Amino acid sequence: MSPTKPLITDPIEQAFKLGEHWVPGIWRYMLPVALTDITLPQERRATCLNCPRAKFEGWRPDYRCCTYHPRVPNFLLGLALSQPASEKIIKTLVLKGFLLPEGMISSPNQWAHYLTDTGEDRFGRSEKVLCPFLEQKSGLCNLYAFRNSVCSTFFCQHDHGDKGDRFWSSLQTVAQQVEMGLGQWALNQLGFDVKAYMKRLNSLSTTIEKVSDPETGAWTPAALKLVWGKFYGREIELLQACGDLVRKHRDELWKIANTIDILEAHKFDRASVRIVPKKYRSEIDAEYFESGDTSPPRDIWRGFKALHKNLWALPAGSLSFSPRAQLMANPKDDAEGKAFKDCTHMVEFRARRNAHDYEWREYIPADKAMALLWFSRRRKVNAALLERLSSMLKQDASQFLSEWTGKKVLTKSLP
Image 1 (cartoon, one colour):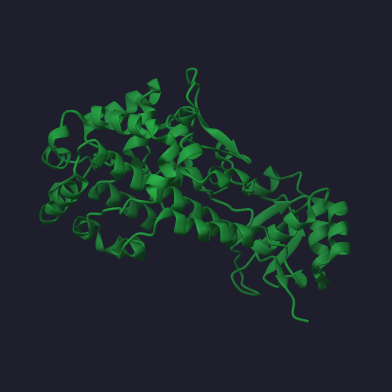
Image 2 (cartoon, rainbow, N blue to C red):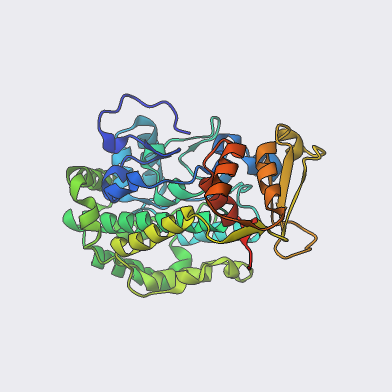
């Protein structure tokens, strides 16, 4: 999705490919080297420039899932200043009052706008909550090589169903903890006292209604002067310095991130709930109210590796087609069916057996339909079955089984 950029010579500024996915250049350095050996799901249906949600579910074709304000750490913004398109946007965001020393972080009113949108089912349809880095005419991202952890790991549909969702969420958490740790480390290294900054943020909790504009969501000048401290008016200088510091210490970033105790302004965060209309407070994640210590990235990484192993594990025992799933011919009687006219069949999955409405639907070609039909009766997973499936599908049978068991269409059968 990245627009044309000038020639880049530093790998830290250049997105690179992991499997089928482009990820930020900083991932070469801030995450374990072992990540490059991990097999990532392809996520074939989550195609941004051919967005299924925009085509069939009424999402905006220009912004799609970018009806969202990403939390972008200071050092990524600092690195992005090297690119003319993103530099212009970052400087505009500073002038309009949308950035803090930690980076781009939603103000209380921006957060309330987002929760209101999700409560009204306007995510993907919003007219107000729009990422400032998206180029509306082209649908391309002007921060693509410097995206944050959420933007780099979010997929609206998953090849492996809930297992895939948990896998990507875990990778997001690893990267997010590293981002937060490095952002605070960089500030402290540059003489910006993070502990004092958190106290200043917490002091705004008593006047939370006045720290951001109710309409635009921009932080007020008074709030910005307080939180930026001696760097007020020198915001670009500080962001640039954070980027340069991370660039200089690139080979130590994972180690550094695991030594940082991340600080948060919990009093300010709890007060921000007052800005959210009561009817939409149920949209707030329960973990938002947690104030315990954060886990170091290495601990989260161990959990991520376990999820990866489980994601691709070959099911043992016997499998059969789930009674909650239904396989049928593609009727081609609506826009979605016609768009997948080359797929002879579709699978519908329901929350419970015999439920009237389906949870999700996927269109598949004839060979996959025949392979799934083969499990109309119980089949033991063994070498003979894998060989038969591989021949039938012209693909790795274990990958096929891991995907469809992940989506719970194939389930373990009792003896």
